[in-house]
Image (cartoon, rainbow, N blue to C red; front, side, top):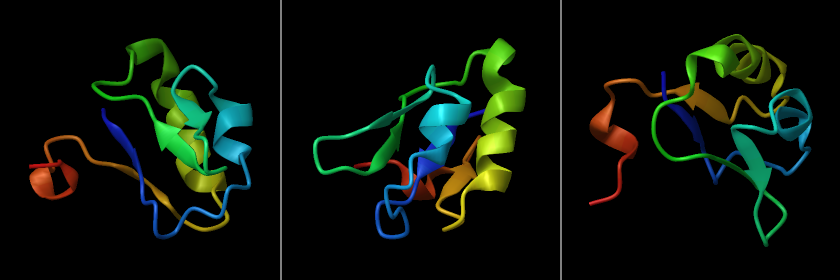
Length: 71
């Protein structure tokens, strides 16, 4: 599992960082970001919960999805 936060949709509510601070953090601009790389297995359920709880629907599981990777 890989988590990705859409910077155009995130409004900085921080719910994801409350649910799973091991994967999500607030950046200097006040918006959430997901840690790079694979989500450790022990945090996958929390990340799924964060995806469901995000009021802006800004978090996605992008496992094997190259469309969000930077060139």
